[in-house]
Length: 137
Image 1 (tube, rainbow, N blue to C red):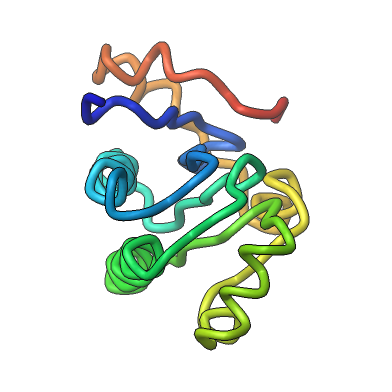
Image 2 (cartoon, one colour):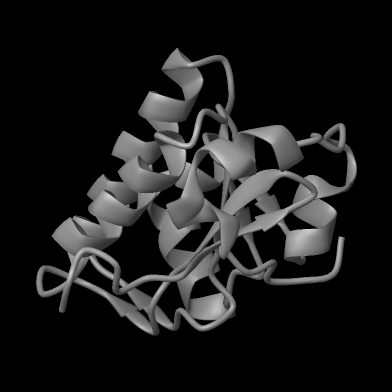
């Protein structure tokens, strides 16, 4: 898989990384790259759309913690959206449910955030201009 394997979109101007069905040692580094790429767009808060994710091992936990710390250092946060029951159990067992913000949906994760006007920035960065929105804004 390439570093572009995980889709990143913008919802109300917030980067949303779509996570894979299984997060483990085989893809944790690629997912970490996706979070770093989303952070490089200049936004402190990032949403992880975990609607497809059914399994997350210790490597995945590490990726989430690193992404959370990076976002926090920039004055934002990592928000998890549409987290499945198995992943919610893992978050509870590890205590991450008390560290990370968990929302029922991507729309809920971005609802309280101010909408960000990004059109001028998108014109300056052609590779991002085509980034699809994951849900209607």
